[in-house]
Length: 469
Image 1 (spheres, one colour):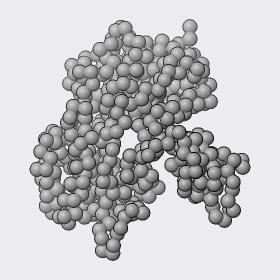
Image 2 (image 1 turned 180 degrees about the vertical axis):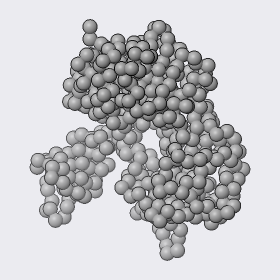
Image 3 (image 1 turned 90 degrees about the horizontal axis):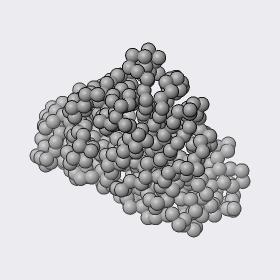
Image 4 (image 1 turned 45 degrees about the vertical axis):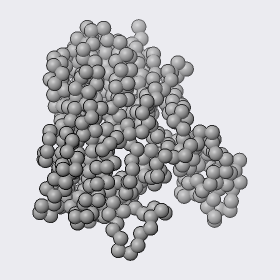
């Protein structure tokens, strides 16, 4: 037990960290209070500065590590602790996998009342750095200053980087990011330097003014690269000035695009895309299949691990070639097209119409003729009439967003009584909630967590359910 320092000093010393929370904070318990401590690792004994106190819990940050955990390692990124990403960098990768697997098991057993004794070991990611195929950076005239910054009066406050957690108008300037492969870092840094040297104004997130707003970089496992520059209020000639620089400095780009976005939010889904050079898409490839990825397309952000995730999904589905498969929340139809060769027919449903158009295009590119795709809210599309028209599925694959499935969708799955349901989830808590309902007619046969995002708290999980006989 740690010794409490007088309350007015807002410190606690000798606090033992016993677990890690979903958001990546270390967990401690003392005096009937739960502590959530930033940058703490299970097994640490730490001195803590208290930041916020609620009724039943306290938030704080480590001031010193009295005794380091066996899981603690030195973070490899200079931005760790300020940048909002990669919050588990201070923990060994083996430990990250251990706690992610533990988290999935706890959620499924506690919320879903699932027997997790036979849960299979988590599949780690072969690559733990430079694994993301998409990053979005923000231009801002309000740079977040760290203790290491030596800023003098009159110095520029421009930054190109990531939002600081909890501050919508502050951007941390990024020198080197370990999330995306080349040429991501060189491109971002050279765009920043060129913009500064040529007097292009950076966006003011509070007053909504300035020329440069966002820089989006997409890479693929095929080696193709897409760059999208989002402008807000550029002066005459500034768009061509920057775009021509990027084209000349990085001539091997597959796709060079720009957008003029003068809305109050950063979303580009309702914006017109202008092609400056190259194609308006790049290709991803998976097991001989090509997937067309445009500036607005959804594609799993870890290409190599997505392949492993989809292989597990296909294995769990155990297709023999004569099955009708429903692929719910199909996105751009990646899973649907990936399993199509093993099924008689695949019917995909997705809320976003543009994603469904991508799904159809991906089928056409790969000469896949046994897929059908439909757009609309899942609970409204997946009706008894829809099932009567398309047939009762032998297998259901469902990969919903973090909120999980609507209760109406769960009930429809129960009504359809498919032989097998493969449930892919990025949120074990909502998956567990849905599994609790599905177990009315199904038994959980297999559970396999998959780590898609090393150094973060996020984890995917695949569950196979079989109809009770």
